[in-house]
Image 1 (tube, rainbow, N blue to C red):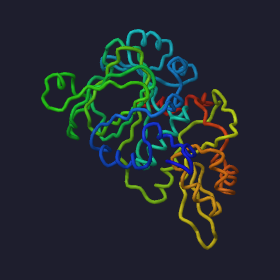
Image 2: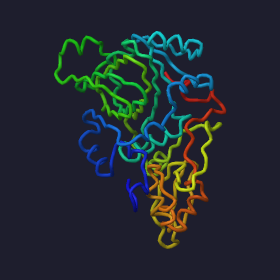
Image 3: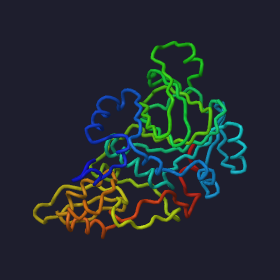
Image 4: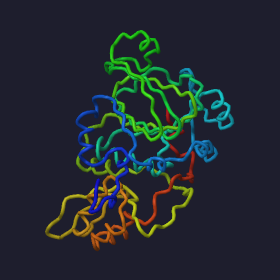
Length: 345
């Protein structure tokens, strides 16, 4: 995650993990085992997704949304009901929102590359609520799912309990926690910038007592992949085409990884290697491989660090892997009805 100088190469996960050793400790101690709270080390998380007011106009761009209150869901995506539902304290959420939020997709790529691996069922949800202390989904678990929550605005109070058996119903009933049938129940207050990890089969319930904007990212257990499928899974980039809002401006001092890549083995005889990208694969000169291997988490790097790699950075710039522009904050989709969220149950 580091570089030749501090800040030379910055991972999307650097806000919560200082280096690769911190990620390794997290993987060993928490992943698949127990919940964890990671507090932010800087303010970069504020640039992952739009703010609350901007999110309110997403239905006007054709994005589907659901509302839920007291375990009752409305999937009509009728934008005329949005503000009324918010005023009542209902929970609003946009499924598969990463398709229009490239910086969020980048964060998901980084989590996939460092912690979770490829070929899992990846989902994202953007939650909005003007909290009135009402429950949304109530106490439940999500099954064989690893989840990362990112609190963007306001606060959420989450109650979590010990892992349930795989056969337990997803809807657990709020009386379970109150009855205290098991030990180990905890209540946590998640503030802005907090990254919260929830392992599979963990009971949880959320209540907001004020305005809250948050992301939930989930990964379901993987299939058994082939080596070729694994490379394709690592470079999955599920962002739709459309208009960038706002359009990023060029920056002379920094470069950003534009898409996920996976560097294959070196063909020493021909001094080249195969670089997998979302659009397929391309043969690149061997000199570009050391830098390409560092781009799997889609970091940004200083122009000075890029120059240190000589012609390698020029090759990656020419192939559109690196660019002097940050990813857009939001994509207004060219074909809204094709968004996966419209089919999300």
